[in-house]
Image 1: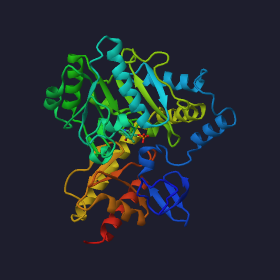
Image 2: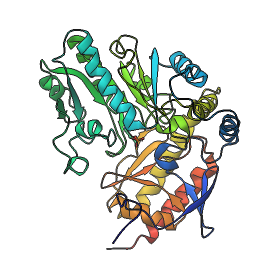
Image 3: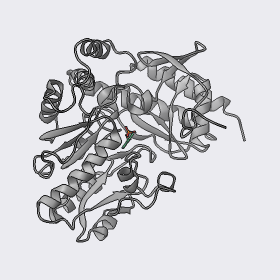
Image 4: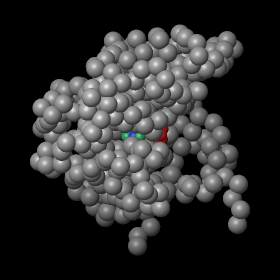
Length: 393
Ligand SMILES: *Cc1c(COP(=O)(O)O)cnc(C)c1O
């Protein structure tokens, strides 16, 4: 059968037609509480007036110029990110996986211009997800991402997550960097331990390696700090950002220290659309909202409230949810399930709540960051109803 849209997704048979705050509405008029937020993208829910205004204003002024000219929105966003992170400069992309691709290239080029071209390797971790380009799938050991696409980019060594001894043992004369998600998203909402993160920083310093953090999902306020690394008391050399930074408009970025960017000089990389005026207008508007005093406190408070409410609810459904603490940080949370998480996500949708599966058995909750307590109460009611009515095997 011919499928005009390439069938690479197992899509739910519903059409979303409108969004408003924390809710989406489908073509049949059904209303959904959105605790998926387009997979951690709609940081301010749907159609936030400040973001709509920024996009409209830019749409009426100028859409695209290419990177042949200065783009004032890029300069403003890069400068603002410089002020609030470890980074000195930014390269803008249209997606997360492009930011990862930039990070891999920057790491290789760094060692190349330092006269160590043999250090092309990067150590990465089991259950990692860095996107779908050939570079990004080379950085993972997940069969479902890699099967049929080999041979992949050489130089990646995948070791168990949170296993510092395994990292140390994997470092050899070819190692140039270490790349990880501080809080693994697709892999099942697994945070790096503080000792692990500090240990990686120390290993990088000792061996002259670049520490690359993929904060595409856990960055931009999601964990209750602007970036997750802040909670570990370390800084990376390179960091990838996307998802929340555009609030729903496609934007990504790779941020680096001045030192780590040593190789990325004129002509080494480019993107036709990356950092276009529309994307930059929206990303700057997202940052306006995130940097408002008290906003990150709100995310932390809502994260704690959500976790507490979920931990009250899950023991009532011992056949659906595992008896273990809710995972994650801030408003990036996961509940370990005893039933296939994909089935539970599908069933919960019929109870009017959107969630996402992470791995085989984790139900992931990624609500808009500006949710209010009433949304949390509603979410827990709907999840509880879904657990109650989940068809018994
Ligand atoms: C989503 C994601 C990516 C890929 O981003 P795309 O925009 O889909 O290319 C990479 N890394 C992490 C941690 C992600 O969550």
